[in-house]
Structure formats: structure tokens, C-alpha cells
Image (cartoon, rainbow, N blue to C red):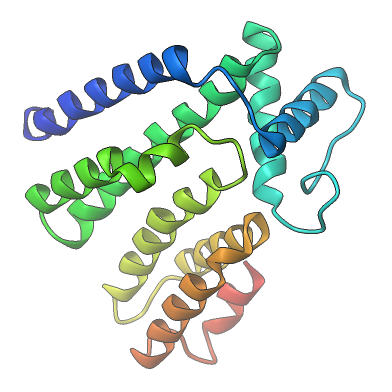
Length: 207
């Protein structure tokens, strides 16, 4: 615990700042957020259980954000703050996963730097509050990378790891098609480094 004290302090500060910003300046919605909020309300009322954003045959991440919103609506009532509060929580989970990714691939100092950059970079900061289906895309980056690193570190990967990697790859693309280049690059690297062969490939493809 002491080894990760700096990150824990950073995490607490980012969480406090995130919710302060939420209550102070994020009490409005644009069209996409309003639609996802409506989806969350319909889920809460049991009227509809969507797989994608209304009116679109893609972006399942928006539907998952609506399910998160429905939980927040059930706990705190229907409103903008509960709607966006779920995204803040998901962004904090993503911050933790980015830190874990940095520790797994490099060292603790690099991991802390990556966490600070993810939390405070202005171009990324706005996405910690926007309900548009992108939160699952951000989550997929460290999840896929951690699974890739786990598989790549062994000469003979376990089928269970390949199954999880295949499942995470499919879910990432389903949630948002922007994940296709990342998924393709990671699979290609595993093939080129001979971590995936004809004998173990079915486990990943089944996932």
C-alpha cells in the first residue's frame, strides 16, 4: 500500500476534483447525452433494453452507458448529475487501469506519469464527463494492453488468457468500432511473435 501511496493520493485528488467539476459546471447535456439519458430512463422503467444507441446500428458503448445511467437514476433519481456521475466513476476506473498498465509495462514512476497525463490533459479531460459511448473505448485500451502483455510474456500462452483476450477484443469492437485498429495491431503482434499458432488460435477466436 505504501508503495502506491502517491498514486492513491493522486486518485483521491482527481476523484474530488472530478465530482467538484461535475457539480459546478457539468449540469447541462447536448443531444447525444440527452438520448443516452432517455435510454437510461427507459431501461429503468423496463420499457426498452437497447444493444446500441437509439437510431444507430453501432456504438454499443452508448447503450452500456445507458445501463450505468439507469443504476444511477435508481439510486439518485433521474437527472444530469447522476447521468454524468456514472461517466466520472468509469473514468476513475480507467485511471486505475492506466496506472496498472504502466506498472506492468514499465515502472511505477512511468505509471504515475501516465496516470497524471490521462487525468489532466485538457484534450482528454472533457471526455471524463461526456456521455457519448466513448468511456468503454478508453477502458478497452488498458484492458487489451494488459491482456496482451500477459500473453506476450510467456512462450506458450494459456488458452484461458487467449480466450479472455478474444472476448475483450470482440467486446471492444462491439462497444465502439474505433477499437478495430488497436485490436488488429495487438493480434498481429501476437502472431508475428509466435504467441498465437494454429493450435491455440481457436481459443482466442472463440472468445
